[in-house]
Amino acid sequence: MLTSVQKEILQTLINLYQTSNGKSIKGEDIAEVMNRNPGTIRNQMQSLRSLSLVKGVPGPRGGYKPTIEAYHTLNVTVSENESEVPMFKDGKKIEDISVAKIEFTSIPNPGECEAAIKVLGNIKDLELGDIVRIGPTPVNNLGVIGEIVGRDDMDNILLLDTTTIRSIPKKTVYDIATLNLVLLKAEDSIKEAAAILSKNSIEGAPVSENGKITGIITLSDIVREIAKSDISIKVKDAMEKDVVTVKQDAKIANAVEIMHNADIGRLVLVDDNDKPIGIVTRTDIVNSITNLEEFPISNNNNNTINNS
Image 1 (cartoon, rainbow, N blue to C red):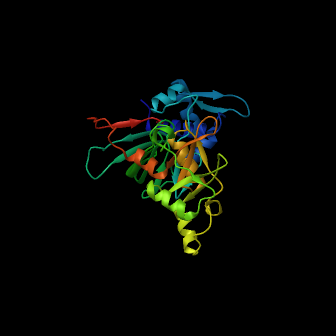
Image 2: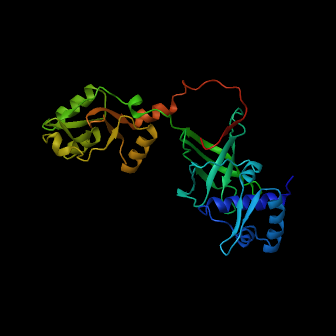
Image 3: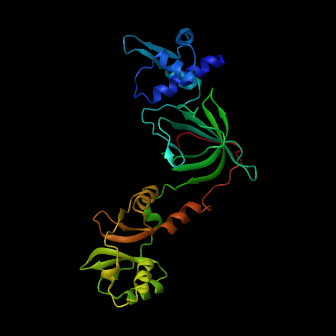
């Protein structure tokens, strides 16, 4: 059974090791983070080495490394192919911190949902009341937003009062896209384009010229031209010429990232030969995320996610 000091030393060693790219950690570095005497750290390291939780690395660049048993003892998962799960505060990524585990502790309780977040890295700069965003996780693209309402420095755990939980389905954009693609002609007038969009109850469509997609036009583009009292111009003069496409086998999460980076609301879906076959919009993505019909009923009162 480890003492509280030994657990804190071991957790600090793991945190530093995770961000050191595999380099050994000096006792002085652990002492500085913990605000303790280096001699105390060295004495405790002897005990941890005898328990096979720590191995010493000799030489001028030597120090300490945690063993696999150390990770198991502190209930921290480790994998050679481990992906980083980031944490953000005030919209900025917190450097040298990664989330190892998300455990929802009170899902069945109406009006509240708490999550215990196991963190790799130094959490001492995070304060109660801070709003943080976690994710996306690598498998299920889970994202969590919440307020820090508790902190356990010994086990490196944050307790969040969650306000938002989202998971993007592992479907491809092909699964949610509109495949009966409506194409506008470059030589159409914007009045003709408006009529086509209205007839099909859509807000935008790609523009075709000589068999190729040369642009995309939306109702917003048309309204902007009408506001200029110019309804005689052609589609090719009002369209957005930089068409952003996405491959049909791309994951929904990839489409979300592309839309976010380009600040657009729709993507043209293309096949392996770059032939346009459909269109996917923000609305399609939102509908896929908020569709609860696919969720199975569960009686579990506790749900743990490891780098999901």
